[in-house]
Image 1 (cartoon, chains in turn yellow, green):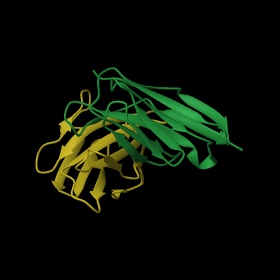
Image 2 (cartoon, each protein chain N blue to C red):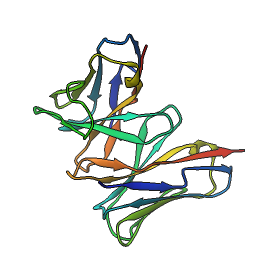
Image 3 (cartoon, rainbow over the protein chains, first blue to last red):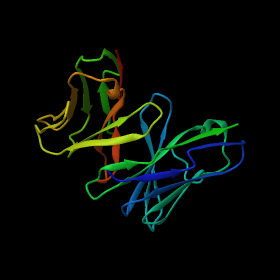
Length: 114
Length: 111
């Protein structure tokens, strides 16, 4: 399967600061990448679809000004959590889809906001 | 909106027993995908089914797509401790590449 990396794997930040998470597709060009949020023992909740060279498409209820997504190249998408608050603490996972619409996930980033 | 439910939510089996998780969509799906997430890990793509009534096997895992393309199942024969994890089904939503993930079934296997 395809390889997707995500960095950092774990981050602790103070309330009010911003955190940037990088997602890279290492062995194929991904025109579309996805950002999910997952709470403990729950399913994946799609936050937004990241399209290379265009604006991200956000799911209902996800604040685009708070979760900034940039898909600068065919192999890199970034998610910036701006002015983070404790309720933003979660597991954030990105994925890249191939030509068959199969999704390959990064290892995830565990964000803790204190 | 589209909902994808899975049952059971959790199952605990002894090694060697069989296990089945069922996936039901509120809408007809063009395809169904299955993913496995180990504890502390990320989802890993297992398989995609496209045809009505399709059955695919991967070693001890058997995947089935319902005739009406609204449900699917994953059956594991003779579970092993390496099968531990949460199994998610997922179906396309809206645009072809977006997926709605099922609620997941967490499998625990003990010796």
